[in-house]
Length: 182
Length: 182
Image 1 (cartoon, rainbow over the protein chains, first blue to last red):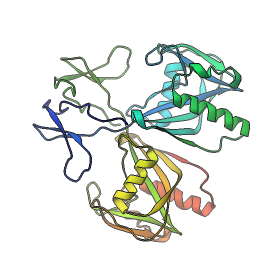
Image 2: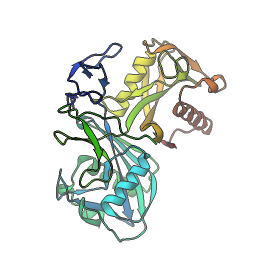
Image 3: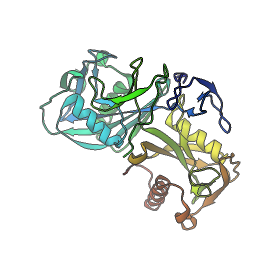
Image 4: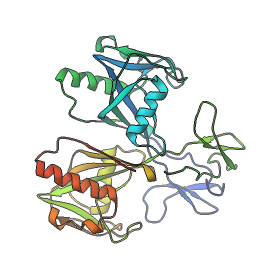
């Protein structure tokens, strides 16, 4: 389990913090020993897409750590000022440079150990032309048989791909998958 | 839109920060002028339930700010070390002290202006006994006709309740609602 003890100084005044349980709370929080500000640490959202062209899915070969050289779906940390869907679209632009239409929410995955929630949307590609950004070595379409399962960067990406192809065989994308990863 | 300029000191060394665009980034981030640490600010998740007993929904009258005295669904900030569903259950324990079984994911709502994503689950109450914690003045069941629409604490709660009763009339809870709130 992710333990939250990464805040050593106060973001307001720079004073040293202690981890103590505030009044009316039941968890230790980084609390400023000078000005008393309480700092909360919470899970982060990763937003991305499953971009589809016919019977093929778009994967991006990572040009950055972690998992340099492994294949991933376009995804990254959600930013302030955007919806989950806008964030997923932004990451698809940045990492694949694809033309697409956003479709529905596809999966919500809790990744407890790293304190993240991953939200994937389906996206329908409008062409086979990709113009990936600096985070991607190569963007390429794969049929289910061609997916390099041993070279997939993250477990959430593997889980999303498996469920996508299952739904495809079933002939229906009518449900949102919820997946918990310890 | 929420602007992220709340970090004035570095959490690692306490040094003063400046908001600058790091290399290979396209947004201003609080960057330490002393040790160089980059601090990211991202949306937070709020997790909760729509607890149901027959044709009635459980609401909690808030004993805390904001919206003291207004009615809400049990919900609160997701913590590290839990899944979205576990967080929703924890908030239901804390705010309502209800006995229930968790059912499926019900709604995912982006609240852009405040930088939050709200995730609601359906929960089936197992009794009419509630034992709310200190954050709740009163926990009570409401039919659709009895809902105090003008006294609902948050827009996401109103949106969730409206959709819950629509689905109920439709006779189906087979879809996850995705809602964007500017």
